[in-house]
Length: 387
Image 1 (cartoon, rainbow, N blue to C red):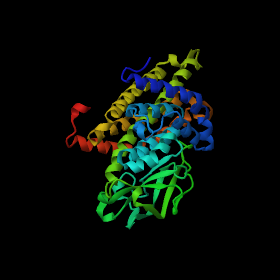
Image 2: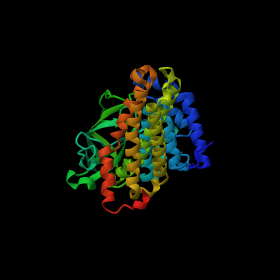
Image 3: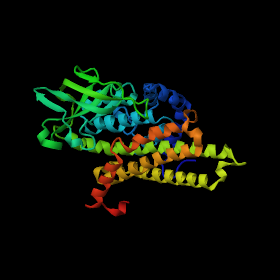
Image 4: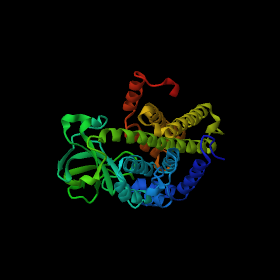
């Protein structure tokens, strides 16, 4: 029986991706986390099964599905492997969608089929050491020389850096122009002058490689500029809106697993002659987890449904990410508490939930930035009927 808020097609996709995740991705998730193995095999599988570029028109290799359908896929993957989920989300919502929405027909024909098939993985490179939440302050430079640009700079904390085959890189033509100078470029991994730092040793999502990206006189042809000069900042904000919906979905996947494992444990673990689910302290925690999960789903699903309304619904996208990410961290901690001492041990699979959940409050906009986005619009002209 499907969810009533979904269309018949979306429910079918939801059932199919859950089955695929159970049969394949879930089986290697713990080992990939332990060994920090980049799950390229999962991306290739998702491409073969038609789960990459889902919102893209079929003429460019996509499925022409709804944004909500793609959100359901992120959620299902994250329930088993949050690392694969964020690689998938960045590939689809930030890199691939950027080319689909802003690319020329020649760029779409050249890049989208391989991205949709999973034979190429895309990354998104905007963050710098001094330009995280304030993307307008980036200092990576792009200088035009006739039919090409020369890019120089360093990017930090780039998901899939060194593993991805293609990068959407943001650089400024003139720092004095602020956001009006920021321009986007499609850069191939093998381009001379492009290199990567070693993988960061992270707390969580350890199978997802995060590294520095270094631009040392990287020559990029004009035909690989995405959009017009100076359009990069607005493009990045638009794409990050979708990315925030994706991170909300990733958080929901983590919340789902936290609740499922907590319920199973509460039903079978006995203390003082009763299963621990008999005790009110555990019951109330479970009830709150279920309520939060339902609320987070509804917020994220509405945000996905209204994705095409664009920046006018930016507060809604921020709310979905803020609520889901903070509840994911809370629920992961709740699961550990329900498991007691066992929850602290890797064998039981709930300590990883907390390690993986924490970053959802940080990347693609911190919780503090989400509150700023929401409050600033409320104080201006946001329609309260939308809440």
